[in-house]
Image 1 (cartoon, each protein chain N blue to C red):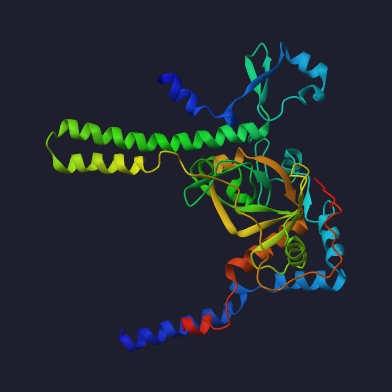
Image 2 (image 1 turned 90 degrees about the horizontal axis):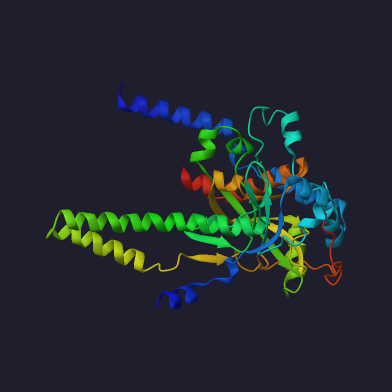
Amino acid sequence: MPENDHLSITAKHIAALTNQLQELPHDTTAARILADYLKNEFPNTVSRRDFLTTLNVLVRPKVTQDEALEHGFLQADEPGEFIIQGDIITTDSAYTLGVRREGGVKYAIANSSCDLSGDAGRVDKGSGVLFAVQPVFSINPAAVSIIGQLVGMKNNSRMFLPAFQDDDPNVSCNYIDFAAPATASFQNILNATRHASLTALGWQIFASLHRRWFTREPEFERKMRG
Amino acid sequence: MNQMVSSTNFNPELFLKAGINFSSFDKLKNAGQQVLEPVQKGVFAQLDTKLGQYVILHHSDFQKLYGLAQDVHRLSSGLTLILNAVRSVQVHQGDESSMMTLISAAQMIGKIPVLPTQVGHGIAQPEGLDIEDDGSLDLTIPSHRPL
């Protein structure tokens, strides 16, 4: 095939695929809908905070083995140990740039639940990504500003979470820090202490904000890439 | 000398004290869950059954020990590297590259006498310059903790 024909066919495919994908790969509409909803329905920081802190809004008691069996996530002959995406866990076996994080840090699990389920080969060999759950202490002079930003879902890299009962008494709330990833083997993630699961809404918000953090694009980027 | 080394290396954070001992599963069952209340950080309970002896740990102690075990595993890989380098020097006596491998391995491990750990991930700061304070939030009132 002459080189010019080859180039023209390639260009046609690039144009067709670019046209079909449009905004989809980098779309951040879900996160914007969420921020707008909170702004319109809840007049101020404290009402947003109270809504998001209520049980079964963002977090729920950890999904049980019976629930996982009932909905087909676990099979009856599989071991009972399981964990799902977004679960809030504690582990001293996670690493960031070779440094082991100790002291009972909480994390949210970034990997999809499928990565963490029954397939023993994957669980034994793989490693997963965890996002640190950072506490906001009421004695932090910037706490009011931090919480105001969090409950408005305005931060690109953070998602609000309530304080947990085993947190330090001075913890006012927490947030998932997408900018503070750690890694751990799947087996170590399975051995972590589970504290809570995300509700369906919490899981959707987690996905929306997580996606915005990793895929948002500056206006010029697509043009820059040609 | 050994005593001095062991006392210097004693880490009270890792010290576990034996607490209550249940001589059968029924004794634990009949006593109810409140009997496990003293099993807090640093204290473990023991359970003897016909199947075997078990240790009941608070989950935070389990995470601490388990996390440390991961580091010991990492360290053992480094020691294996040094042992292999030593064997290589033994087999190829006078071989300069074997000797250099041993020296490099020893230097590499020597630089990390303690494996790096850090508590937590740092202190929260506001993101960006937008100050979000509409005056509605009073942090002297503890917020509800749903879980």
